[in-house]
Amino acid sequence: MGKRRRVTERRKTRPAVLGGMIAVVVGGAGFGVYALYGGAAADERTGAAAGHRAVPSGPLTAAEIRTASTRFLTAWQHGRVTAAAAATDDPAAAGTLLTGYTKDARLKDVTLTPGTAKGTEVPFTVKATVAYHKLSKPLSYGSSLTVVRRASDGRPLVDWHSAVVHPDLRDGDTLVTGESGTPPVRALDRDGGEITAARYPSLGTVLDGLREKYGKKAGGTAGVELRVVRGKAAKAAKLSDKTLVELSEGTPGTVRTTLSPALQAAAEQQVAKRARASVVALRPSTGEILAVANSGHGFNTAFQGSLAPGSTMKVITSSLLIDKGLAAADKKHPCPKRVTYGGWKFHNDDDFEIKGGTFKASFARSCNTAFISQAKKLADDDLTRQAQQVFGLSMNNWAIGVPTFDGSVPVQSAAQMAASLIGQGGVRMNPLNMASVAATVKSGSFHQPYLVSPSVDHRTLATASRRLSGRTLSQLRELMRYTAAYGTAAEAMSGLGPDYGAKTGSAEVDGQKKPNGWFTAYRGDLAAAGVVQAGGHGGDTAGPIVAKLLKLGG
Image 1 (cartoon, rainbow, N blue to C red):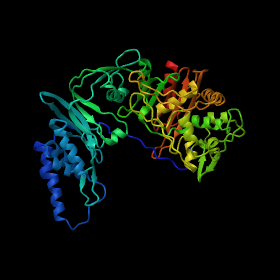
Image 2 (cartoon, rainbow, N blue to C red; image 1 turned 90 degrees about the vertical axis):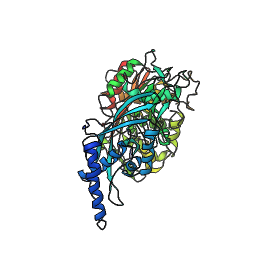
Image 3 (cartoon, rainbow, N blue to C red; image 1 turned 180 degrees about the vertical axis):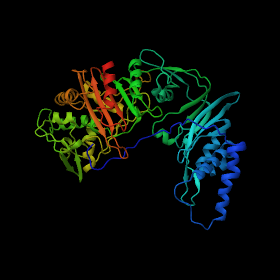
Image 4 (cartoon, helix red, strand yellow; image 1 turned 30 degrees about the vertical axis):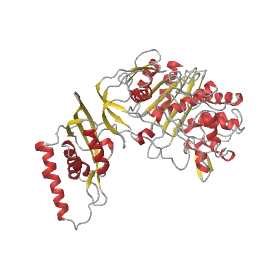
């Protein structure tokens, strides 16, 4: 926190499945009749008779929303792909996906049931049959559409995205039914117990990733399935294909993971207490991932999130400043109320200052200006090099067994470089990255996190090119230990010492009233990090989640 301009957070979100549908079936005498002879016809006649009038503008009326959604749903249900696509604002893309809905996904007997509109959004349920040769199974799910007004002529149309057809689809994805190219896997925890999404809801995306990576290597055979096949954009975001319906079982191969059943269960319970919470726990001495959980199960923020880490980034920045002789734990260090750099004004939370205090005091209280004041003494690429060479981040080369985002610390200049020192600017991380940072401090060197042992497929793990000096490492541990005992992390870490360390953080995000709350810590041979988006200060939000795991397994 603390810079004048806030950085817009890039987040990948997944559409929600909406329930509470009203049972009014499209087609026949009712909803479909209205579409064909009521609202649609009236709308078309009005347009033809009033061609000389101004283009309609302003908010959509309830009648316009009902008419546009009805036109689309009626045509889709009755297989009139061209008409359905024409009722959207992107007929080409809509036509392609709706054609594939029947041809490639093998879906028939489609019934669409609209719910009550919420503003311009109309929820609906879909019931259909997946049929492949002599195999068939029912399919039922919820989705939604949004009606918008086309600027050129004011006509209400469905705002087209692939998620309208199915909420698990990203634009560019397709639905395909057939023999799966990837056999299923049976994933096991470190104790040999089976891992299922029913038991651990957070692990659905992890299981998808394990199947994609190890399905063909683990000795299984493929079955027949309806699957989401990812397009270029989703693959670039490292999303895995997803099974929706299994028509015939394949023979799964077996993949053993490093997950701890006790810690995984605790992680699931902890994130469920807060909206948009994520956490990762791992073993510093080896890099083994012991738990990963998200309160939202559609996207694995813990492994693939790309969020500004706020003041937890000060762990890396402190190591840089100590390495360069610009700070020392017990030496005096400036912490004024405000500092200006690169034309931006940076300040501390509530504009506090520490007069005559040490660097340790500034770290423990998370003084932004103590770090910004050193920006003029750093090269633009110093922080990037420190993150890469010591902490193994920002090189996109981790191979943990499933897709990950490995952190980003780009080279920046002026005010953006200064903002990066306190975890804003262009810096992006997730709980996996920040748990690894704490683990590196605890173990003394970087061990790439992994979920599946590299011995399974003989892959090469990422390494860091250098270790922290003994002098820097001892001071960094002292900073984190002092913060856990007396600083902003003290309440969450109470009773967990003495072999521990922590750092809190909060990251401002445009459009959010509250910042994202971060917490990274270690205790014994366990490190963990978590984030609660739009939750507030990290010590109050992510802190208790992380501390609970450390207490259980540290």
